[in-house]
Image (tube, rainbow, N blue to C red; front, side):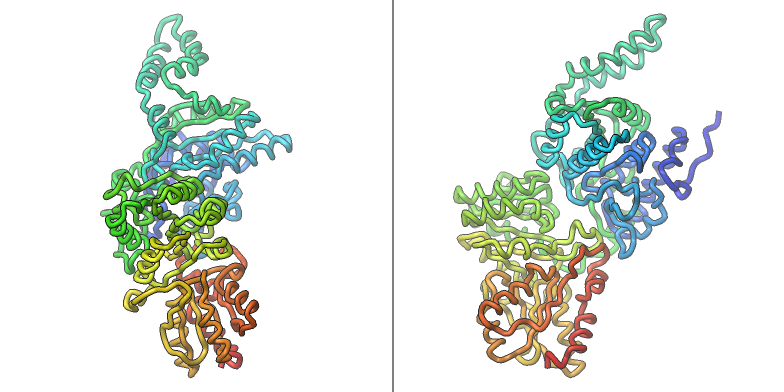
Length: 628
Protein backbone atom coordinates (compact mmCIF):
# COMPACT_ATOMS: atom_id res chain seq x y z
CA UNK A 1 0.00 0.00 0.00
CA UNK A 2 1.42 3.37 -1.01
CA UNK A 3 1.89 6.07 1.60
CA UNK A 4 0.09 9.36 1.48
CA UNK A 5 1.25 12.18 -0.78
CA UNK A 6 4.20 14.13 0.58
CA UNK A 7 3.14 17.32 2.36
CA UNK A 8 4.96 20.57 1.62
CA UNK A 9 6.27 22.81 4.39
CA UNK A 10 4.75 25.86 2.71
CA UNK A 11 1.30 24.30 3.15
CA UNK A 12 1.64 24.03 6.94
CA UNK A 13 -0.34 26.99 8.28
CA UNK A 14 -0.75 25.75 11.84
CA UNK A 15 -0.14 22.73 14.13
CA UNK A 16 -3.47 21.18 13.16
CA UNK A 17 -2.07 20.57 9.67
CA UNK A 18 0.46 17.99 10.91
CA UNK A 19 -1.76 15.88 13.16
CA UNK A 20 -3.14 13.67 10.39
CA UNK A 21 0.18 12.93 8.72
CA UNK A 22 1.64 9.42 8.54
CA UNK A 23 5.21 8.41 9.39
CA UNK A 24 6.48 8.87 5.84
CA UNK A 25 4.98 12.34 5.53
CA UNK A 26 6.42 13.36 8.89
CA UNK A 27 9.89 12.14 7.93
CA UNK A 28 9.70 14.13 4.71
CA UNK A 29 8.48 17.20 6.54
CA UNK A 30 11.30 16.94 9.09
CA UNK A 31 13.82 16.86 6.24
CA UNK A 32 12.25 19.97 4.67
CA UNK A 33 12.34 21.75 8.02
CA UNK A 34 16.03 21.04 8.44
CA UNK A 35 16.75 22.29 4.94
CA UNK A 36 14.79 25.44 5.73
CA UNK A 37 16.78 26.04 8.91
CA UNK A 38 20.09 25.69 7.05
CA UNK A 39 18.82 27.87 4.19
CA UNK A 40 17.63 30.72 6.41
CA UNK A 41 20.49 30.67 8.92
CA UNK A 42 23.09 30.51 6.14
CA UNK A 43 21.62 33.77 4.80
CA UNK A 44 20.78 35.62 8.00
CA UNK A 45 22.92 34.04 10.68
CA UNK A 46 21.33 32.67 13.82
CA UNK A 47 21.19 29.59 16.00
CA UNK A 48 21.94 26.58 13.85
CA UNK A 49 22.89 23.42 15.76
CA UNK A 50 20.31 23.78 18.53
CA UNK A 51 17.44 24.16 16.04
CA UNK A 52 18.53 21.24 13.87
CA UNK A 53 18.51 18.99 16.92
CA UNK A 54 14.97 19.87 18.01
CA UNK A 55 12.98 19.14 14.81
CA UNK A 56 11.40 15.77 15.70
CA UNK A 57 10.85 16.86 19.29
CA UNK A 58 8.95 19.94 18.11
CA UNK A 59 6.89 17.90 15.65
CA UNK A 60 5.95 15.49 18.44
CA UNK A 61 5.02 18.33 20.80
CA UNK A 62 2.70 19.93 18.27
CA UNK A 63 1.10 16.59 17.35
CA UNK A 64 0.43 15.62 20.97
CA UNK A 65 -0.47 19.03 22.40
CA UNK A 66 -2.88 21.58 20.96
CA UNK A 67 -1.30 25.02 20.98
CA UNK A 68 -2.33 27.74 21.72
CA UNK A 69 -4.79 26.12 24.15
CA UNK A 70 -1.96 24.03 25.53
CA UNK A 71 1.03 26.20 26.39
CA UNK A 72 4.54 25.45 25.12
CA UNK A 73 7.38 27.41 26.75
CA UNK A 74 10.84 27.03 25.15
CA UNK A 75 13.73 27.67 27.52
CA UNK A 76 16.29 30.12 26.12
CA UNK A 77 14.23 29.98 22.92
CA UNK A 78 17.09 29.51 20.49
CA UNK A 79 15.65 26.11 19.51
CA UNK A 80 12.30 27.58 18.41
CA UNK A 81 12.72 27.78 14.60
CA UNK A 82 10.84 24.50 14.01
CA UNK A 83 8.09 25.77 16.33
CA UNK A 84 7.84 28.95 14.25
CA UNK A 85 7.58 26.94 11.04
CA UNK A 86 4.79 24.76 12.42
CA UNK A 87 2.82 27.77 13.66
CA UNK A 88 2.42 29.54 10.32
CA UNK A 89 5.76 31.36 10.06
CA UNK A 90 7.68 29.19 7.59
CA UNK A 91 7.60 31.88 4.87
CA UNK A 92 8.22 34.70 7.35
CA UNK A 93 11.37 32.88 8.47
CA UNK A 94 13.07 34.48 5.44
CA UNK A 95 13.18 37.67 7.52
CA UNK A 96 14.54 35.90 10.60
CA UNK A 97 16.53 38.27 12.84
CA UNK A 98 16.33 41.07 10.24
CA UNK A 99 15.05 44.50 11.15
CA UNK A 100 11.25 44.32 11.03
CA UNK A 101 11.29 40.52 10.56
CA UNK A 102 10.54 37.65 12.91
CA UNK A 103 12.62 37.30 16.06
CA UNK A 104 15.12 34.53 16.67
CA UNK A 105 13.37 33.87 19.98
CA UNK A 106 9.74 33.31 21.03
CA UNK A 107 7.85 36.59 21.34
CA UNK A 108 4.35 36.88 22.78
CA UNK A 109 3.63 39.85 20.49
CA UNK A 110 4.59 37.81 17.42
CA UNK A 111 2.24 34.82 17.69
CA UNK A 112 -0.48 33.40 19.96
CA UNK A 113 1.54 30.17 19.87
CA UNK A 114 4.46 31.85 21.66
CA UNK A 115 3.11 31.36 25.17
CA UNK A 116 5.99 33.17 26.83
CA UNK A 117 8.91 35.30 25.63
CA UNK A 118 12.36 33.89 26.35
CA UNK A 119 15.97 34.67 25.53
CA UNK A 120 17.91 33.94 28.71
CA UNK A 121 18.40 30.43 30.02
CA UNK A 122 16.72 28.56 32.88
CA UNK A 123 13.49 30.59 33.00
CA UNK A 124 11.04 28.23 31.28
CA UNK A 125 10.10 25.99 34.21
CA UNK A 126 9.32 28.95 36.48
CA UNK A 127 7.27 30.65 33.77
CA UNK A 128 5.46 27.44 32.87
CA UNK A 129 4.71 26.82 36.52
CA UNK A 130 3.13 30.27 36.70
CA UNK A 131 1.02 29.50 33.63
CA UNK A 132 -0.02 26.16 35.15
CA UNK A 133 -1.08 27.69 38.44
CA UNK A 134 -3.01 30.43 36.66
CA UNK A 135 -4.77 27.66 34.72
CA UNK A 136 -5.64 25.85 37.95
CA UNK A 137 -6.94 29.01 39.62
CA UNK A 138 -9.15 29.67 36.59
CA UNK A 139 -10.43 26.09 36.52
CA UNK A 140 -8.77 25.32 33.18
CA UNK A 141 -7.84 21.90 31.85
CA UNK A 142 -5.07 22.56 29.31
CA UNK A 143 -1.53 21.30 29.49
CA UNK A 144 1.56 23.39 30.13
CA UNK A 145 4.91 22.17 28.82
CA UNK A 146 8.36 23.60 29.50
CA UNK A 147 10.96 22.52 26.93
CA UNK A 148 14.33 22.79 28.64
CA UNK A 149 17.68 22.13 27.01
CA UNK A 150 21.05 23.43 25.86
CA UNK A 151 22.46 23.55 29.37
CA UNK A 152 19.59 25.43 31.02
CA UNK A 153 19.55 22.75 33.72
CA UNK A 154 22.94 24.00 34.90
CA UNK A 155 21.16 27.17 36.09
CA UNK A 156 19.89 27.34 39.65
CA UNK A 157 16.55 28.89 38.72
CA UNK A 158 15.51 25.53 37.23
CA UNK A 159 15.91 23.81 40.59
CA UNK A 160 14.01 26.47 42.46
CA UNK A 161 11.13 25.90 40.04
CA UNK A 162 11.40 22.09 40.11
CA UNK A 163 11.42 22.11 43.90
CA UNK A 164 8.36 24.39 44.04
CA UNK A 165 6.43 22.41 41.42
CA UNK A 166 7.17 19.10 43.11
CA UNK A 167 6.32 20.42 46.55
CA UNK A 168 2.85 21.61 45.49
CA UNK A 169 2.37 18.74 43.00
CA UNK A 170 1.29 21.20 40.30
CA UNK A 171 0.31 19.46 37.05
CA UNK A 172 3.14 20.37 34.70
CA UNK A 173 5.23 18.65 32.04
CA UNK A 174 8.94 19.40 31.73
CA UNK A 175 10.62 18.06 28.58
CA UNK A 176 14.38 17.85 29.04
CA UNK A 177 15.94 18.13 25.58
CA UNK A 178 19.23 16.49 26.50
CA UNK A 179 21.76 17.13 23.75
CA UNK A 180 24.69 17.08 26.19
CA UNK A 181 25.49 20.68 25.26
CA UNK A 182 24.75 24.25 26.26
CA UNK A 183 26.68 26.54 23.96
CA UNK A 184 29.78 24.58 24.89
CA UNK A 185 29.71 21.02 26.29
CA UNK A 186 27.74 20.78 29.51
CA UNK A 187 29.57 20.74 32.80
CA UNK A 188 28.69 19.74 36.33
CA UNK A 189 27.28 16.91 38.39
CA UNK A 190 23.86 16.95 36.72
CA UNK A 191 25.48 16.55 33.31
CA UNK A 192 27.28 13.46 34.62
CA UNK A 193 24.02 12.16 36.08
CA UNK A 194 22.16 12.59 32.79
CA UNK A 195 24.99 10.83 31.02
CA UNK A 196 24.43 7.90 33.35
CA UNK A 197 20.69 7.91 32.67
CA UNK A 198 21.02 8.05 28.91
CA UNK A 199 23.69 5.33 28.85
CA UNK A 200 21.95 2.78 31.08
CA UNK A 201 22.29 0.03 28.51
CA UNK A 202 21.03 -2.68 30.85
CA UNK A 203 17.62 -1.06 31.12
CA UNK A 204 17.43 -0.02 27.47
CA UNK A 205 18.38 -3.51 26.33
CA UNK A 206 15.88 -5.25 28.58
CA UNK A 207 13.11 -2.83 27.58
CA UNK A 208 13.76 -3.43 23.86
CA UNK A 209 13.82 -7.22 24.23
CA UNK A 210 10.75 -7.43 26.45
CA UNK A 211 8.57 -5.12 24.37
CA UNK A 212 9.67 -6.87 21.20
CA UNK A 213 9.20 -10.47 22.36
CA UNK A 214 6.29 -10.53 24.82
CA UNK A 215 3.45 -9.66 22.41
CA UNK A 216 4.42 -12.68 20.26
CA UNK A 217 4.20 -15.24 23.09
CA UNK A 218 1.01 -17.35 22.61
CA UNK A 219 -1.82 -16.91 25.14
CA UNK A 220 0.14 -15.21 27.93
CA UNK A 221 2.11 -12.73 25.83
CA UNK A 222 -0.38 -9.86 25.78
CA UNK A 223 -1.28 -10.07 29.55
CA UNK A 224 2.44 -10.18 30.42
CA UNK A 225 3.10 -7.25 28.09
CA UNK A 226 0.39 -5.18 29.84
CA UNK A 227 1.75 -6.20 33.26
CA UNK A 228 5.25 -5.15 32.22
CA UNK A 229 3.99 -1.69 31.29
CA UNK A 230 2.28 -1.36 34.68
CA UNK A 231 5.46 -2.22 36.59
CA UNK A 232 7.89 -0.69 34.06
CA UNK A 233 8.79 2.23 36.32
CA UNK A 234 9.75 -0.11 39.15
CA UNK A 235 11.83 -2.27 36.81
CA UNK A 236 13.49 0.78 35.28
CA UNK A 237 14.35 2.17 38.70
CA UNK A 238 16.23 -1.03 39.45
CA UNK A 239 18.49 -0.41 36.45
CA UNK A 240 18.29 3.41 36.18
CA UNK A 241 18.69 5.26 39.44
CA UNK A 242 16.50 8.29 38.62
CA UNK A 243 16.09 9.19 42.30
CA UNK A 244 17.08 12.79 41.68
CA UNK A 245 13.89 13.83 39.90
CA UNK A 246 11.82 11.53 42.09
CA UNK A 247 13.16 13.31 45.16
CA UNK A 248 12.06 16.64 43.68
CA UNK A 249 8.52 15.32 43.34
CA UNK A 250 8.57 14.67 39.59
CA UNK A 251 7.59 11.46 37.83
CA UNK A 252 10.48 10.64 35.49
CA UNK A 253 9.82 9.20 32.01
CA UNK A 254 12.74 8.23 29.83
CA UNK A 255 15.27 8.31 28.47
CA UNK A 256 13.61 8.36 25.05
CA UNK A 257 15.18 8.79 21.60
CA UNK A 258 14.49 12.42 20.76
CA UNK A 259 14.64 11.73 17.03
CA UNK A 260 12.14 8.85 17.05
CA UNK A 261 8.74 10.43 16.52
CA UNK A 262 6.72 7.37 17.47
CA UNK A 263 8.58 6.94 20.75
CA UNK A 264 8.36 10.64 21.54
CA UNK A 265 4.63 10.79 20.90
CA UNK A 266 4.01 7.68 22.99
CA UNK A 267 5.85 9.04 26.03
CA UNK A 268 4.29 12.52 25.67
CA UNK A 269 0.82 10.97 25.48
CA UNK A 270 1.63 9.08 28.65
CA UNK A 271 2.86 12.25 30.35
CA UNK A 272 -0.48 13.93 29.59
CA UNK A 273 -2.36 11.37 31.69
CA UNK A 274 -0.64 12.18 34.99
CA UNK A 275 -2.16 14.68 37.41
CA UNK A 276 1.26 15.54 38.84
CA UNK A 277 4.58 17.03 37.70
CA UNK A 278 6.28 14.92 35.01
CA UNK A 279 9.77 15.15 33.52
CA UNK A 280 10.29 13.61 30.07
CA UNK A 281 13.96 12.95 29.29
CA UNK A 282 14.52 13.12 25.51
CA UNK A 283 18.02 12.48 24.14
CA UNK A 284 18.82 14.44 20.97
CA UNK A 285 21.86 15.31 18.90
CA UNK A 286 22.74 18.94 18.41
CA UNK A 287 23.17 19.75 14.71
CA UNK A 288 21.25 16.65 13.59
CA UNK A 289 21.09 16.14 9.83
CA UNK A 290 23.73 18.70 8.80
CA UNK A 291 27.25 17.33 8.93
CA UNK A 292 29.08 20.56 9.65
CA UNK A 293 26.85 21.27 12.65
CA UNK A 294 26.90 17.69 13.96
CA UNK A 295 30.70 17.64 13.91
CA UNK A 296 31.11 21.08 15.52
CA UNK A 297 28.02 21.69 17.69
CA UNK A 298 29.70 24.33 19.86
CA UNK A 299 31.04 26.53 17.05
CA UNK A 300 27.79 26.18 15.05
CA UNK A 301 25.53 27.01 17.99
CA UNK A 302 25.22 30.62 16.87
CA UNK A 303 26.66 31.53 13.47
CA UNK A 304 27.07 34.38 11.04
CA UNK A 305 25.95 33.88 7.41
CA UNK A 306 27.78 30.96 5.78
CA UNK A 307 27.99 28.88 2.62
CA UNK A 308 25.66 25.90 3.20
CA UNK A 309 27.65 23.69 0.80
CA UNK A 310 31.02 24.14 2.48
CA UNK A 311 30.00 25.42 5.92
CA UNK A 312 32.50 28.27 5.51
CA UNK A 313 31.62 31.84 6.55
CA UNK A 314 30.42 34.02 3.68
CA UNK A 315 32.91 36.71 4.63
CA UNK A 316 35.87 37.02 6.94
CA UNK A 317 35.42 39.09 10.12
CA UNK A 318 36.19 42.72 9.27
CA UNK A 319 37.09 43.88 12.75
CA UNK A 320 39.07 42.67 15.75
CA UNK A 321 37.12 40.96 18.50
CA UNK A 322 37.43 42.53 21.94
CA UNK A 323 36.87 39.13 23.55
CA UNK A 324 39.64 37.40 21.61
CA UNK A 325 42.07 40.22 22.37
CA UNK A 326 41.13 40.15 26.07
CA UNK A 327 41.62 36.38 26.18
CA UNK A 328 45.05 36.62 24.57
CA UNK A 329 46.21 39.29 27.02
CA UNK A 330 44.76 37.40 29.98
CA UNK A 331 46.74 34.33 28.92
CA UNK A 332 49.90 36.44 28.79
CA UNK A 333 49.21 37.84 32.26
CA UNK A 334 48.47 34.36 33.62
CA UNK A 335 51.88 33.14 32.48
CA UNK A 336 53.45 35.92 34.55
CA UNK A 337 51.25 35.59 37.65
CA UNK A 338 50.02 32.25 39.02
CA UNK A 339 47.23 34.05 40.90
CA UNK A 340 45.38 34.91 37.69
CA UNK A 341 42.31 32.73 37.21
CA UNK A 342 39.30 33.00 34.90
CA UNK A 343 35.61 32.29 35.49
CA UNK A 344 32.91 31.96 32.85
CA UNK A 345 29.31 30.78 32.62
CA UNK A 346 29.21 28.20 29.80
CA UNK A 347 30.82 30.64 27.35
CA UNK A 348 34.58 30.09 27.37
CA UNK A 349 34.84 30.15 23.58
CA UNK A 350 32.35 32.99 23.07
CA UNK A 351 34.18 35.28 25.51
CA UNK A 352 37.67 34.55 24.13
CA UNK A 353 38.86 32.27 26.94
CA UNK A 354 39.51 29.12 24.90
CA UNK A 355 43.31 29.71 24.65
CA UNK A 356 43.42 30.31 28.42
CA UNK A 357 41.41 27.12 28.99
CA UNK A 358 43.79 25.06 26.85
CA UNK A 359 46.89 26.47 28.55
CA UNK A 360 45.60 26.48 32.13
CA UNK A 361 42.60 24.12 32.40
CA UNK A 362 42.94 23.98 36.17
CA UNK A 363 42.69 27.80 36.38
CA UNK A 364 39.61 28.18 34.15
CA UNK A 365 36.32 27.62 36.00
CA UNK A 366 33.34 27.10 33.70
CA UNK A 367 30.38 26.95 36.08
CA UNK A 368 27.65 26.34 33.49
CA UNK A 369 24.74 28.73 33.05
CA UNK A 370 25.03 29.98 36.61
CA UNK A 371 26.03 33.63 36.53
CA UNK A 372 25.25 34.39 40.18
CA UNK A 373 27.44 31.49 41.28
CA UNK A 374 30.20 32.62 38.90
CA UNK A 375 30.40 36.04 40.56
CA UNK A 376 30.38 34.76 44.15
CA UNK A 377 32.91 32.04 43.23
CA UNK A 378 35.16 34.81 41.92
CA UNK A 379 34.63 36.73 45.17
CA UNK A 380 35.78 33.70 47.15
CA UNK A 381 38.81 33.29 44.92
CA UNK A 382 39.70 36.97 45.40
CA UNK A 383 39.26 36.72 49.17
CA UNK A 384 41.83 33.91 49.14
CA UNK A 385 44.39 36.07 47.34
CA UNK A 386 43.76 35.07 43.72
CA UNK A 387 43.20 37.55 40.86
CA UNK A 388 39.94 36.36 39.27
CA UNK A 389 38.55 37.62 35.96
CA UNK A 390 34.87 36.99 35.22
CA UNK A 391 34.23 36.97 31.44
CA UNK A 392 30.55 37.21 30.67
CA UNK A 393 28.08 38.91 28.34
CA UNK A 394 26.80 42.10 29.94
CA UNK A 395 23.17 41.11 29.40
CA UNK A 396 23.77 37.94 31.44
CA UNK A 397 25.49 39.77 34.31
CA UNK A 398 22.07 41.27 35.04
CA UNK A 399 21.26 37.90 36.60
CA UNK A 400 24.00 38.36 39.20
CA UNK A 401 23.39 41.94 40.31
CA UNK A 402 23.06 41.10 44.03
CA UNK A 403 26.29 39.12 43.97
CA UNK A 404 28.17 42.02 42.34
CA UNK A 405 26.90 44.41 45.02
CA UNK A 406 27.16 42.32 48.18
CA UNK A 407 29.74 39.64 47.51
CA UNK A 408 32.24 41.67 45.48
CA UNK A 409 31.87 45.43 45.86
CA UNK A 410 30.70 45.63 49.48
CA UNK A 411 33.82 43.70 50.46
CA UNK A 412 36.10 45.64 48.10
CA UNK A 413 37.42 42.48 46.45
CA UNK A 414 39.65 42.77 43.36
CA UNK A 415 37.43 40.99 40.86
CA UNK A 416 37.70 42.06 37.22
CA UNK A 417 34.56 41.85 35.07
CA UNK A 418 35.08 41.59 31.31
CA UNK A 419 31.62 42.46 29.97
CA UNK A 420 31.37 41.39 26.34
CA UNK A 421 28.58 42.49 23.95
CA UNK A 422 28.11 45.73 25.94
CA UNK A 423 26.16 47.43 23.18
CA UNK A 424 23.03 46.76 21.19
CA UNK A 425 23.11 43.05 20.41
CA UNK A 426 22.06 43.36 16.79
CA UNK A 427 20.00 40.51 15.36
CA UNK A 428 19.62 38.71 18.70
CA UNK A 429 17.28 41.46 19.86
CA UNK A 430 16.25 42.97 23.19
CA UNK A 431 17.16 40.03 25.42
CA UNK A 432 20.75 40.31 24.22
CA UNK A 433 21.24 44.08 24.06
CA UNK A 434 23.96 44.85 26.61
CA UNK A 435 22.84 48.41 27.27
CA UNK A 436 22.01 48.57 30.98
CA UNK A 437 25.50 48.01 32.39
CA UNK A 438 26.24 51.59 33.39
CA UNK A 439 22.79 51.98 34.91
CA UNK A 440 23.10 48.97 37.21
CA UNK A 441 26.84 49.23 37.94
CA UNK A 442 27.71 52.93 38.08
CA UNK A 443 26.06 53.62 41.42
CA UNK A 444 27.82 50.76 43.30
CA UNK A 445 30.40 52.19 45.73
CA UNK A 446 34.00 51.21 45.10
CA UNK A 447 33.49 49.90 41.54
CA UNK A 448 35.60 51.35 38.73
CA UNK A 449 33.62 51.34 35.48
CA UNK A 450 35.39 51.61 32.13
CA UNK A 451 34.37 51.51 28.46
CA UNK A 452 37.13 51.42 25.80
CA UNK A 453 36.83 52.87 22.31
CA UNK A 454 39.28 50.32 20.86
CA UNK A 455 40.97 47.00 21.52
CA UNK A 456 44.21 48.84 22.27
CA UNK A 457 42.55 50.92 24.96
CA UNK A 458 40.87 47.82 26.39
CA UNK A 459 44.29 46.18 26.77
CA UNK A 460 45.54 49.18 28.76
CA UNK A 461 42.42 48.96 30.92
CA UNK A 462 42.86 45.24 31.60
CA UNK A 463 46.47 45.73 32.67
CA UNK A 464 45.34 48.50 35.01
CA UNK A 465 42.49 46.37 36.38
CA UNK A 466 44.74 43.40 37.19
CA UNK A 467 46.81 45.63 39.44
CA UNK A 468 43.94 47.57 41.00
CA UNK A 469 43.07 46.73 44.63
CA UNK A 470 39.29 46.88 44.09
CA UNK A 471 36.63 45.68 41.63
CA UNK A 472 36.78 46.85 38.00
CA UNK A 473 34.23 46.35 35.21
CA UNK A 474 35.28 46.82 31.57
CA UNK A 475 32.37 47.05 29.11
CA UNK A 476 33.00 46.52 25.40
CA UNK A 477 31.05 45.61 22.24
CA UNK A 478 31.61 42.47 20.23
CA UNK A 479 34.08 43.91 17.76
CA UNK A 480 36.11 47.04 17.22
CA UNK A 481 34.26 49.57 15.10
CA UNK A 482 35.67 51.02 11.88
CA UNK A 483 38.73 53.22 12.11
CA UNK A 484 39.47 52.63 15.77
CA UNK A 485 42.25 50.13 15.10
CA UNK A 486 44.09 52.77 13.04
CA UNK A 487 43.71 55.35 15.82
CA UNK A 488 46.30 54.25 18.40
CA UNK A 489 45.76 54.59 22.13
CA UNK A 490 49.11 55.32 23.79
CA UNK A 491 47.90 55.17 27.39
CA UNK A 492 44.97 55.07 29.78
CA UNK A 493 44.39 56.66 33.18
CA UNK A 494 41.11 56.26 35.10
CA UNK A 495 39.32 59.59 35.44
CA UNK A 496 41.25 61.21 32.58
CA UNK A 497 39.41 61.40 29.25
CA UNK A 498 41.12 61.40 25.86
CA UNK A 499 40.94 64.34 23.43
CA UNK A 500 40.79 62.82 19.97
CA UNK A 501 40.45 65.85 17.71
CA UNK A 502 40.60 69.62 18.12
CA UNK A 503 40.19 71.87 21.13
CA UNK A 504 37.66 74.34 19.74
CA UNK A 505 33.94 74.50 19.12
CA UNK A 506 31.20 72.17 20.30
CA UNK A 507 32.50 69.33 22.44
CA UNK A 508 31.22 65.83 21.55
CA UNK A 509 31.72 63.60 24.58
CA UNK A 510 31.31 59.99 23.45
CA UNK A 511 31.39 56.61 25.17
CA UNK A 512 32.83 53.36 23.82
CA UNK A 513 31.51 52.42 20.36
CA UNK A 514 29.84 55.83 19.99
CA UNK A 515 33.28 57.43 19.58
CA UNK A 516 33.21 56.27 15.95
CA UNK A 517 29.89 58.00 15.39
CA UNK A 518 31.15 61.14 17.16
CA UNK A 519 34.12 61.40 14.79
CA UNK A 520 31.72 61.09 11.82
CA UNK A 521 29.47 63.76 13.37
CA UNK A 522 32.47 66.09 13.68
CA UNK A 523 33.20 65.66 9.97
CA UNK A 524 29.56 66.37 9.04
CA UNK A 525 29.52 69.50 11.22
CA UNK A 526 32.80 70.72 9.73
CA UNK A 527 31.28 70.41 6.26
CA UNK A 528 28.45 72.67 7.48
CA UNK A 529 30.90 75.20 8.94
CA UNK A 530 30.50 74.20 12.60
CA UNK A 531 33.64 73.48 14.60
CA UNK A 532 33.61 70.52 16.98
CA UNK A 533 35.96 68.44 19.07
CA UNK A 534 35.66 64.80 20.20
CA UNK A 535 36.32 63.51 23.70
CA UNK A 536 36.59 59.78 24.46
CA UNK A 537 34.97 59.40 27.90
CA UNK A 538 36.45 55.97 28.52
CA UNK A 539 36.13 56.20 32.30
CA UNK A 540 32.50 56.34 33.45
CA UNK A 541 33.45 55.99 37.08
CA UNK A 542 35.44 58.00 37.95
CA UNK A 543 34.45 60.84 35.61
CA UNK A 544 36.96 63.41 34.36
CA UNK A 545 35.89 66.20 36.71
CA UNK A 546 38.80 68.41 35.70
CA UNK A 547 37.74 68.43 32.04
CA UNK A 548 34.09 69.14 32.91
CA UNK A 549 35.20 72.09 35.06
CA UNK A 550 37.41 73.31 32.20
CA UNK A 551 34.47 73.21 29.76
CA UNK A 552 32.26 75.05 32.21
CA UNK A 553 34.86 77.73 32.94
CA UNK A 554 35.26 78.35 29.21
CA UNK A 555 31.45 78.33 28.79
CA UNK A 556 32.03 75.66 26.16
CA UNK A 557 28.84 73.87 24.99
CA UNK A 558 28.96 70.08 24.93
CA UNK A 559 26.74 67.10 24.15
CA UNK A 560 26.98 63.44 25.14
CA UNK A 561 26.68 60.43 22.81
CA UNK A 562 26.15 56.99 24.30
CA UNK A 563 24.60 53.65 23.38
CA UNK A 564 22.75 53.41 26.68
CA UNK A 565 19.48 54.67 28.18
CA UNK A 566 19.39 58.16 29.63
CA UNK A 567 18.60 56.91 33.14
CA UNK A 568 21.86 55.87 34.78
CA UNK A 569 24.08 56.36 31.75
CA UNK A 570 27.08 58.60 31.10
CA UNK A 571 24.94 61.67 30.32
CA UNK A 572 23.08 61.14 33.57
CA UNK A 573 26.37 60.84 35.47
CA UNK A 574 27.73 64.05 33.90
CA UNK A 575 24.48 65.91 34.59
CA UNK A 576 24.57 64.84 38.23
CA UNK A 577 28.21 65.91 38.57
CA UNK A 578 27.53 69.29 36.99
CA UNK A 579 24.51 69.89 39.23
CA UNK A 580 26.49 69.00 42.35
CA UNK A 581 29.41 71.25 41.39
CA UNK A 582 27.56 74.22 39.85
CA UNK A 583 28.85 73.54 36.34
CA UNK A 584 27.34 74.03 32.89
CA UNK A 585 25.33 70.89 32.06
CA UNK A 586 25.30 69.14 28.66
CA UNK A 587 23.21 70.77 25.94
CA UNK A 588 21.80 67.41 24.97
CA UNK A 589 22.31 63.70 25.63
CA UNK A 590 21.98 61.47 22.57
CA UNK A 591 21.05 58.08 23.99
CA UNK A 592 18.70 55.14 23.65
CA UNK A 593 14.95 55.73 23.98
CA UNK A 594 13.06 54.63 27.08
CA UNK A 595 11.94 51.47 25.28
CA UNK A 596 13.22 48.00 24.46
CA UNK A 597 15.03 48.19 21.14
CA UNK A 598 14.06 45.55 18.52
CA UNK A 599 16.41 43.28 16.58
CA UNK A 600 18.30 44.20 13.44
CA UNK A 601 21.80 45.04 12.30
CA UNK A 602 23.77 47.41 14.51
CA UNK A 603 23.65 50.14 11.86
CA UNK A 604 19.87 49.78 11.50
CA UNK A 605 19.38 49.96 15.24
CA UNK A 606 21.51 53.11 15.52
CA UNK A 607 19.26 54.73 12.89
CA UNK A 608 16.17 53.39 14.66
CA UNK A 609 17.30 55.17 17.84
CA UNK A 610 18.54 58.32 16.12
CA UNK A 611 22.13 57.61 17.17
CA UNK A 612 23.81 57.25 13.77
CA UNK A 613 26.10 60.07 12.67
CA UNK A 614 23.64 61.46 10.10
CA UNK A 615 20.78 61.65 12.60
CA UNK A 616 22.92 63.24 15.32
CA UNK A 617 24.53 65.80 13.02
CA UNK A 618 21.12 66.82 11.58
CA UNK A 619 19.72 67.33 15.07
CA UNK A 620 22.76 69.35 16.10
CA UNK A 621 22.53 71.58 13.05
CA UNK A 622 18.87 72.19 13.85
CA UNK A 623 19.88 73.58 17.25
CA UNK A 624 23.16 75.20 16.13
CA UNK A 625 22.12 78.52 17.66
CA UNK A 626 22.53 76.86 21.06
CA UNK A 627 25.85 75.17 20.31
CA UNK A 628 27.71 77.82 18.35
